[in-house]
Length: 206
Image 1 (cartoon, rainbow, N blue to C red):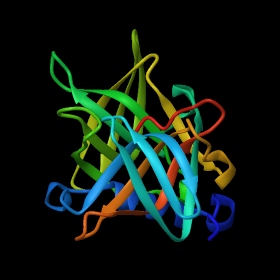
Image 2: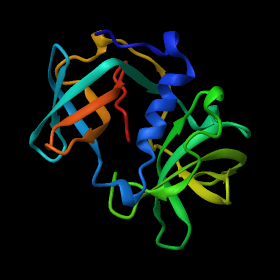
Image 3: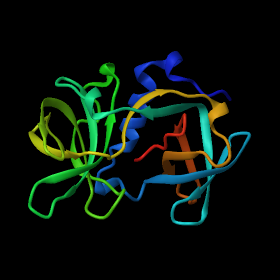
């Protein structure tokens, strides 16, 4: 089995990732978001040392894909871009971003919406189109529009901002940080068709 890179599959690879990543509460018993570092990759079995501590063994499906993330900056975010922003409620109201993901132009509209996310307690993921970006004293504020609404999000200086890019099986080395949207079968076994890995020293912050 060979992983298909973004250069080979274009938007289809990231579409698969977003489709699995946008999990509503009703589907939580079917899907597991695995976060951690690679312990090993043997054949089609990826073992991840999870952030919770235990190892998770994932069976990689035929034609599985690898997606990389590389560093970006707030200056790379422009009106019209399609982004995913994980945020937390602010103490003075509104939401403050804790990470930003910039998607490829071909993915505009995929996984659109604002829904609960399990990175941290009370966190939310908002996927939408940037309508404007206002520079403020301690960062920027983005207005993100999605079907059914829009959200104003504060983007503090210094938070992780990444953009998706190509990666290969060679990037899946022991110790590499990964995010894997996986499915749990009736027998409890985990399987996955997409692995998101940090490249060039950048970790997937999802």
